[in-house]
Length: 268
Image: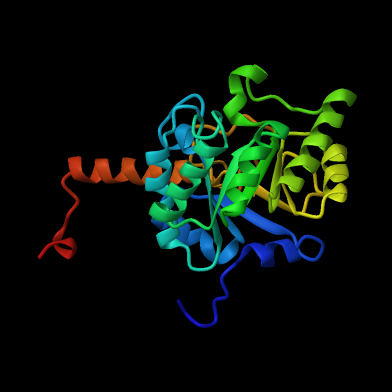
């Protein structure tokens, strides 16, 4: 690693809460990690790979082995960014001991720097146990994709006063349990601002307004790699890579069939 590159750490991220917006993007392999690394603070190996890589409807089918496989590739490509990996569904819902075991697997086998899990007070014991083992934990509240069926799909959370109060209580609880940062997904901007103000740890928003400490998007949504535009309102598509890929594949196929590729300049 070049001496000029200063690696991102959990303490550095926490110190940036009120001074500089944090940038997080998902990545699932070495090549994408290398491309994104110079521009982000955090690379999240999200269980969203179940949807954007594997083609599933939800994230629920992703296994710990699959997470470790993808996380190891991302870690190999990251020179600066903090690499965080999701704990997949089923690895922490049965208790703190299982959660710690899964987190240790990701740290030892994939060499990630931190893990992320979803939920509030109900996962605080897991957050505490993992943190006490020396593994940083990022929490996730609001729209939590692993609760897809319970929530009736991907829907905005915290819209009622009771739901907003519960999210604020959960946010304070995960911070007290030891979380070093908190993802807030698909909640009203005003509520996200209130939570951010109430906590000492950074918040990272996705569909949670402008007042969070940072922002995150799924890379496939950001670059338009999906077959169509992402359905959620918060997904800004900065380019449409799918069109470039389709055009290149079509041109290649036409040239092969017309016997114009390869010509002499591409032959030995």
